[in-house]
Image (cartoon, rainbow, N blue to C red; front, side, top):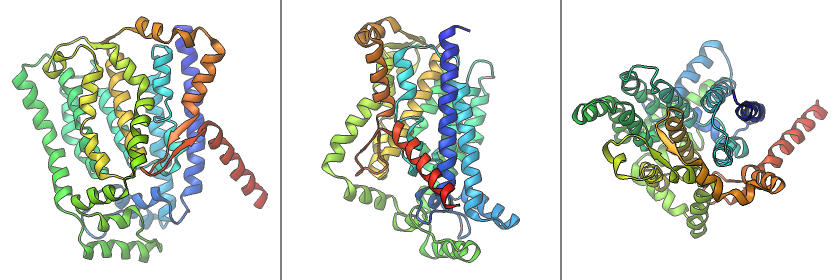
Length: 409
C-alpha cells in the first residue's frame, strides 16, 4: 500500500473515531432532553395505526415495553448503534482512496461527515438508516457480486427503508443510475424492465404513505399510548404528523418560513460545500456509454440532473441544512463508487494545475484546509445562519459540559 494512502487511512480513522466519541456523548446528553427534535422523530409509532416513519419507533416502543426500559434509553441505544455502523461502513468505503487535495476536501467538507456532530439536531436522524442502506447497496453493486443481487436488494429492502424515511424517494435516481451502470451489458429493453420491476414495491409503499396521512383520532391514540406507557408527549416531529399530514400543508409550511436571505445563503452553501465534488465531477468522464450518460462529456452534468428532484424536497421541508447534508452524502457515495470500480476516468493533473497556487505553499494549504473543513457548517433550519468554527466549538462544548457534570457529581 502506498505511503500516502496508508497515512490517509490512519488520519481518517482518527477523524471518524473522534466523530463517534463526540456523537455518542451528545446522543447521551440529548436523549433525556424533553424538547429534542431527534427523539421526537423516533417516538413516532404504529400504536394508532399505520403512519409514515413509524417502523423504527414501533420497534423501540415494543422493546421498551417488553424489557421494562425507558423508551428514550432504548432510542439512545439504537441511535448509538446505527451511528457506529454508519461510520464503520464509511471507513470501509473510503479507505485506500487515491490521495489528492480535492478528493480529501470532498470527504472532509463540513456538509458531510462533520455536519451531524456540528449541528446535533441532525445527529442520528432517520436518514442515517438511508445512508447505511445506500452504502450496503453500493457494496453489493460492485463487480464481485452477481448483477441480479442489487436488483433483489432494491425489490426487497428499499420498501423497508421507505417505511423508515419515505423522502428517500427523491434519491431513487442515484440508485437507478447505479443499476443502469451495473447492468449495462443487458439489452436496453431488458435493462429498463428489470430496473422498473425492482422499484415497484418501494413506489407502492411511498404512494400508500403519501395518500394515507394519519387521522386526528389515530394520532390521539398514538399520543395517548406514549403518555400512558412512558409519560412522553407527542411533540415536534411526532406532533407534525397531524399539523403537516397532507402534502399541501408541507409545501405551505415551508413557503411561510422562507426568508429572502435563505434564498441567497443556501445556493452559496451548496456551491462552496459541493465545490470539491463538483470540480471532481467536471474533470471526470464515465468510461461507459449508456442511456442518458452517453450524452455528456463529463460527470458533473449527470450528477446535477440526479440532484434535480431534491428541489421538491427543499420546497417541502424546513430543515434545509439536513437536505444539503443528505444530498451531498448521496452525491459523494455515488461518485466514489464509480471511482473505486474503475468506471470513470479522472484528470487529476488538470485539477492539480488549477490548485497549484495552494499546494505549493504548505502553510497556506494547511490554513485553507482547516478553514474549509472545520471553519463553518450550515445550521439545520432554513432560517438559521451559518455556524462558525465547529472544529473548535464541538470539542469545547463537549469538554465544558463534561467538566460541569464531573464537578456536579
